[in-house]
Image (cartoon, rainbow, N blue to C red; front, side):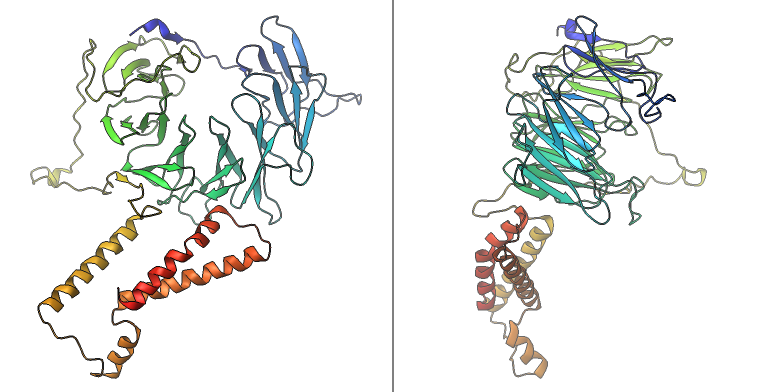
Length: 522
């Protein structure tokens, strides 16, 4: 392992923040945004508090007056050809770092935030407008510079329950994931507010990502292939699920102590981890075969990063998050610690990072499952026992859990089925198959069937199907078919349906066939 690929840098707390990759530096001035006067006492404009510098020459290219603290930061495209800035109901675009001329404007009333797509041309931008006076919030996707006209937007997704959003583009800039958050959960279920996850594609498709477990959304990450994403969500122990571009679950990792997910640069390995107030447990998964590779523990870690080679992992304990036991470790994804550095007790580590490399420098390698050898001595984990009151210390230990962990589950559709069955659907299917097998066994043993004329109550039951479970299914199917008819009427009236509503209509034939089979007793 070449340890010279590591760069250690001291992170300083100041008012400088590097925005572009190589050429520009943004400096916030002495007056904080939102606290300065719009005009000075003599009526002239206030002092600019946002400056853009050329890093190579050190010259100030442009100064602005920035009034708001939130979302003040300019954003560049990956090739630094265009720069965008949020200014009073408009997004201003500059080209080739010429800040004296506004090349294009995107005007949207009360626009709050934006996010430029990764990659080169054609550039795309996602913009967020919060709802007001009962109107929903919405996120729209545009292609630069086509901003004018009623049909200029590539896609639009509206939703309620959003005080702020986080917009995440995939690497190919074909879709955006939107995490909508509220400051307060009106149901009282969570102290941290309520969150929902939405999917928007540049081809116009949109959907709400259905998360099976209630609770906060800790992390959402795209795979570098841009064909799937992983969400970590739900009250602890949290669930982690991989979804495809149809927002259908592909693989459920079950529950565990986790709050973060990290795909490797090549997208073939996924690390689920529990940092912060969790113990630092990591699960390393092969996401092609959905096989667990290793389960290392990086206690007290405040930072995690994949090496560009897709084989090594960096974890670190840094100040000011933690001021004791600072240091970093370099791991192989199979769980071996290859290098360890501990900061002296009187020092602090502020930042550590990998040396960057261009994509494609390191080819993807075959995944290993056996831990690679290491010269770093392994640390024996500290054995901790639960506190026991004095009255119970001489009694047998009973193992009990507050939560039963759910095991991983492959959610891919079975051959011949269009969609994977949910946990409840699988349970009901097994239950129905068991009842059906019991009935067939009873008939083969010569058990007499009840006569429908034995009582008026039995006559009514026989008129339906003779099986309360079947009657319940028939009723539910008719309810679904009625809802599909209503959706078809809305579509005929010209209403634009969402992706999940169109999928419901496509299932009409299968539901009719299932209803016919149940009524015939098949």
